[in-house]
Every structure is written in C-alpha cells, then in structure tokens.
Image (cartoon, rainbow, N blue to C red; front, side, top):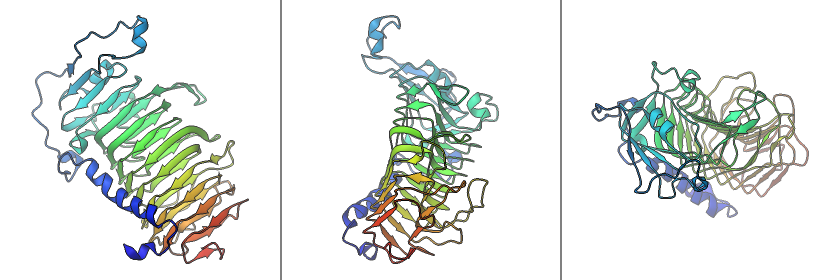
Length: 405
C-alpha cells in the first residue's frame, strides 16, 4: 500500500479509513460463515405454531391512555422472537414503540413493513435473510421491495407523519425486484450492519427522510445504487434538508452507483468503501431550489469503479468515475483516496465536476486534500467550470483544466 500514500498531507487519515473500510464490513456479518447465496441458508425446522414468541418484562406495559405511556417500555423492551416459518409481519404489527423483533437464523419469505415508531428489527447477521415470496400481496411486496419503513406523506409528497426511531440491523435482504430496503418519510432511522444485495433497484433506499444513520452496511450487486439517499426517486423538486443524515463505513460493490446522494442537503458521507461499481460516489442535483449540496464527502476509499453501465434518461453512460458532482452547491470533497479508474464515459475520471442533465453547473465546490492516482483520462476534472469552485492541496498528476493538482 505504501506507493499510494506519497503525499504527506492527508496520509494518516486516509490510510486509517482504507484499513477500517476494508476490514469492518466483511466482519460485521460474521456471526456465521457467509453462504454462497442468500437462498442457500439452511433453515431450522419450521415450528408447528406460526405465532411469534414474545418475551415480556416482569412489569406490565403501561396503559396507552395513561400519561406514563409516553415513556414506552420503561421496564425494558418486549422481545418478539421469530423462527423461520412464522410471520415476521405479524411480529412487527404486534410490536409497540421500544420493542424488538428478533429473527432467528434462516430464510424469511415475504416483504415486511415497519410503520410503528421505535421498533427494532434485528437478525443474526447474514444468517437471517428476507427473500421474495410470490404469494405475498402486501403493498410493500407489490411495489417490489423487501423491507419497507413507511411514514405518511400528502399527495404532493410532503411528510405528514414520519416513522420515527425505527432500527433495522444485522440481517440480509436479497433478490427483490426493486429495493432491498425502501424507507420513506422517516426520522432518526438507523440501518446498521445490513447486507442488501441482488435487488433490481437500490440496495438501501432512503427517501424524504431526516436524521438517518446508515452505518457498516454491505450493499452489492444491486441494479442501481448500493445506497440511495434522495428527496424522492420519481419526483423532481427542491433538495431535502436531511438535518444531519450520516452515511458511514459502508461497503459498496458491484452496483451501478456505489453511493448516490440526489437532491439532498446537510449530510455527511465518510469512511465508505466504494469499489467495483460503474461509478463510486455521485452527488446529483439540478436547477431545483433549494439546490442539492451543503454536504461533505470525506475520508472515503473510492477504487476501480470500472464496470460499464448503459445511459438512462437522466444520466449518460457510467464507467470509471470515482466521485462525481453534478448540479450541486457548497459540497466539500476532502481527504478521500480515489484510485484506479478508467473508462470511456464523458464522466470518467477520479473526481469529476460535470453539468447536470438540465445544464446546471456546480457552484462553490471545495475539493481539497484528496489523494488521486492512476485515474484515466484524468485525476481531477472540472468539466462545467462552475462559479467559485476551488481545488487545493490535492495529490494527483493530471487535471482538466491543468493546474488543479
């Protein structure tokens, strides 16, 4: 690894991120050996009873009409334990704020929807797998999604009642037609140590949500983004103020885009590893107001995202792009390691600033203290020459226009 760190400026922090990103996620789901396929998990014998087992605390749950009920489960959470063959959705529907739904090892056919505040859905790492079920006709399944965390929005898409404080951790979601995890209109959502792979669209999709924490997940081989954070997937409009959403220490491989941040603001993406995608990390905006931006992309390892992906109506073909900014404002890209990209897309390169689909340039981007090596055709590319962009103390060899290294 030594030749990658010839610059002394961001050397220590980027080296730390490289080691942490490469090591953290492969071990996070290591409760058992990783199966060759999510469908190859050996499930325990199906119990004869289909109702989930609930472990209750010694003290009774407060009456919902009592003022003390504002402190859910003061005596400790109820734990709803689900075995393969039992209904995960029934356990989730029975859960109250603060309860935990715990999945044993095995496959769980069918989609699941969380619509109650403060519910935790927890598995046994990659040994607990949600998989599609053709017999499931729920709204989540009909939409092609595996796990839905769904609040209430009005007909304009504006939040009316978000789902608050839901936690999804230590499980796998695989093989769904659209999104592995589809979260919309949530607040303080946590998705932690989840493997979401081989889904048709996004691995983990978080739309119209605030204060989300997405950490130590593995999103691989999904049709679109490994992790997707946006206002809405299918609507335009001004960028969403996420109020401090964090996307950290995730491993993103084999997707169209590793991490896509679209029409969002006030967000941090740090310590992620994006490798083997068509594109690594994309921050995407347009001419909507407020504009996408006011966020930071720092201390990520973005390496060899060289697969070829065909163009779509909103984006040209993608190949060999490390970090892309398009139609954004006030984005800080700092202390990232971006290496080994090569492609023939108009956006190919290490760190690329590119006009949006409606021609909106980036404004006031700060690209500083990054290490870039072996990116073809160029390490740094300012292709839209937007207003107020600054390139400072980056370690690289080539730039377009010249002089940014």
